[in-house]
Amino acid sequence: MTDWIIAIAGTPEGARLATALALVSAFAHALFGALQKGRHDPWLSRAAIDAGLVALMLPAALFLVPWPQGPEWLFLAGAVAIHFAYKLAMAQAYTRAAYTVVYPVVRGIGPLVTVGFAMVVFGERYGPGQWLGVALLSGGILALAALNPTGDRLGRPILLHGLAWAVLGGLLVAGYTTYDAWAIRASADPFTFLAWFFLLSSLDFPLLLARRLMAACVAPGGGGLAVRGIVGACLALVSFGGVMLATRVGPVGQTAVLRETSTVFAALIGWGLLGERVGWRRAGLMAVIASGAVLVQVAV
Image 1 (cartoon, one colour):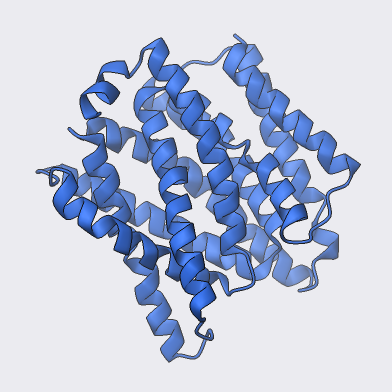
Image 2: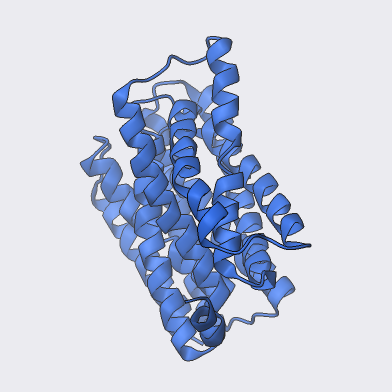
């Protein structure tokens, strides 16, 4: 599998695989975000998910893939640091604002900045039609967020604080997408990077939760939270692992843009599972987002 992934990188076959992985990752990430924003405290949910990841990835990292060598440990350290900052920003944002407010802001900012990073770091180039697609996608996503704040019950100051954390989360999405793409390309075995990344980056929130529990900041959960943690861990593997592999074999900017179709899935999930309204304006914006993603893939 490793040899095949390396062999198709930068080829038309690799681009097709990257497209498929990005779409699967988008759906999984929308489910993942809804799971973290569900009935449990976001800190509690994220810690449960990370604990599930540790349980799943510890045997894989120790026994199923080669161990990291030399500078690969430094690549992993950088990835762990930037993902910790992202997770912290998302937990703060979800504590203060609704899922359908936070999620579109984060995902709308991410692709715009990621495309710019990809041009600088990887030398990728985009034509006018593709830039139009990026503008439509990000503009549609951010417009989705603008439909929601008036109904937030926590009050405007808290909401604005949550939106500030969401903006930071979007910038960190661009940062980790670019960094992860660079690191997984620089690693000898992409699956070694993935296994050890998931293991090492999942140790932080369980430790933070233990501290918050001792300080009585959150109430402990029960068996339902354990199930949420395992399901969330599986979704994280598909979502984050899928997009990392996609950036290994295909263009980083296009992958990042296509993955943000997760916002369309998120709006449907927010309506169907979390009881948040989806009207005709939001449906129209979802069509704009999808059109933008298609333009980035096919335009020049």
